[in-house]
Length: 162
Image (tube, rainbow, N blue to C red):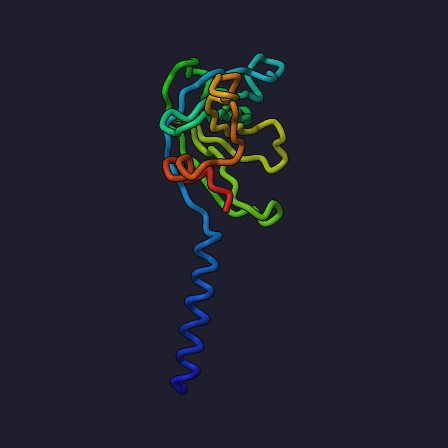
């Protein structure tokens, strides 16, 4: 193999690695504060089939609220947690080619593993970075940014979209 072909091969390998690294999945851990745990549906024996869990991220700046829903196994496990409890979560972040940006999913809350359903339209997150809004030196309200700030992404990188 000629030196030019070797150099081309090395550049191609580096390029492929760089592209793969940009869109590779990453895993994170965080601590959340549970706001609400609600059974959505039960089976005929009264066991939870679907449960919503709402929480806020304890160590992230701003006001990040998330609500996740999952099925029977997650539901029966998560019922032992009460609002106000601090719980560790595991988060998977991956590239979504349809949305053309990164997305994250909470895959574990405490000891409870959550199966991600691609058809889930009940889970959502609200990301807000709010500050007082002043007019003529008088605070008249609050202004909120809905896109993650640099400070938020630095502290909680799974929120980055690109």
